[in-house]
Length: 85
Image 1 (cartoon, one colour):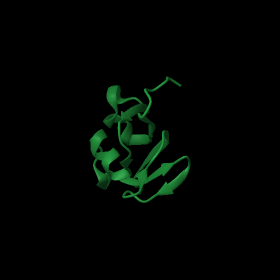
Image 2 (cartoon, helix red, strand yellow; image 1 turned 90 degrees about the vertical axis):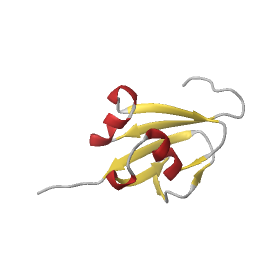
Image 3 (cartoon, helix red, strand yellow; image 1 turned 90 degrees about the horizontal axis):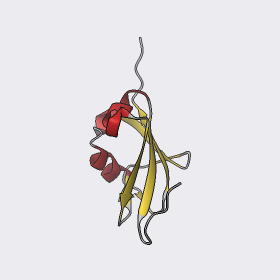
Image 4 (tube, helix red, strand yellow; image 1 turned 180 degrees about the vertical axis):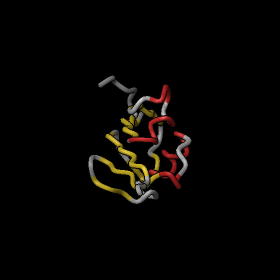
């Protein structure tokens, strides 16, 4: 893990399945650094991931409401809406 400047929050993003194409280089993982805490919804906007394509956002493995403020550096997983036939 890289060091971040004091007062900076770093979210380690894992975008699953078809959501990965929204991350830089269409990678499965990315890192977002910010000076202030973001909500799950704000994080999706920053990554330009349409909310309608997201089933859930988890923080450290626990599902969270999109309006919850993610106050510390942590792992955030973004799960897509599932479909099948």
